[in-house]
Length: 256
Image 1 (cartoon, one colour):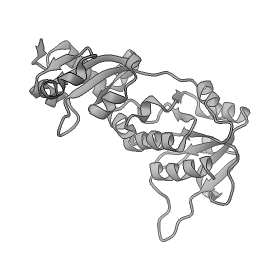
Image 2 (tube, one colour):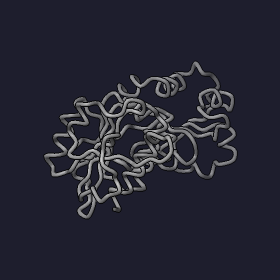
Image 3 (cartoon, rainbow, N blue to C red):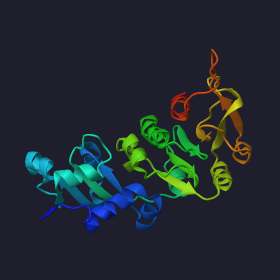
């Protein structure tokens, strides 16, 4: 049977999951869209798959081992976040990690944890997760007032890294940083008053504290840092985009 109305309960559920963080949190589910993102989902996390009639006509052989629901092209276009829908989306079960899980993911050779304080831009968050996979970080720790990591814009920006990079949201970020330090990890706060990052300041076990795009780190979080670091700037530029700055520091910390 083909779903032909946005009044269908399954379609309503997809819309709710895409639009409301509260619903995603309650159901512990989120939505991914597009061929690449669908192909990246671990099979055990797949809750439901939806394909457009057009996608089914052209890709039926690729769906032989997949249980899916067909949606009319017009309905699929209405629920899609993209201008040109690729015709496949899925409801996915959220993964759950703890701070201890991330601490246990540290490499024996060189480890890096990224700690985010009130980061608001979904694109920045997704890019940090994606770049973090490339830099080999142990995981991401976020304050509970960061952007929702399951926001569709974040998911798209991760390009699949959401399924491979451990992350956790904590209610008390300063306390979480204390736990990180107690595990023998040195904390470095990205701060305008810091020492240049490229002067050999990083040790073996590193946690990078990254603040809000406009306001930087809160004083309470910055005070938890063992060291303050900065990226040296030329011209009249005071700072870089949060995702760009984090990428530079992650790679320096991991492969200094």
